[in-house]
Length: 133
Image (cartoon, rainbow, N blue to C red):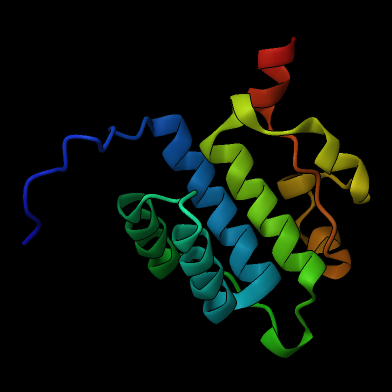
């Protein structure tokens, strides 16, 4: 069904795959399936998301059983937060630390109800803390 892997495609490690799975659940709760598809297309068009990675994320989204956000109530800030988190997962070493102070912090994925209610999440991940630590 799928052809041979392109030479420039790097295999994804399990840690990154798990973080993407967690992120997809958050993204679906925050911006919904349709907005997630549009955001992934935009990020791919700008050259920041390889097509293979986009397909992986779309497959993960098909597995998600999260209650999707009411898409008409999604703000640009929600889209920015979701995109910022994706950037941090895909390239934690290159993620700019100055984005985080622009938004209020919460517990990220640890407190799902508060996150869903407020729309604010921390964009710092455990891997980033370890890299600095």
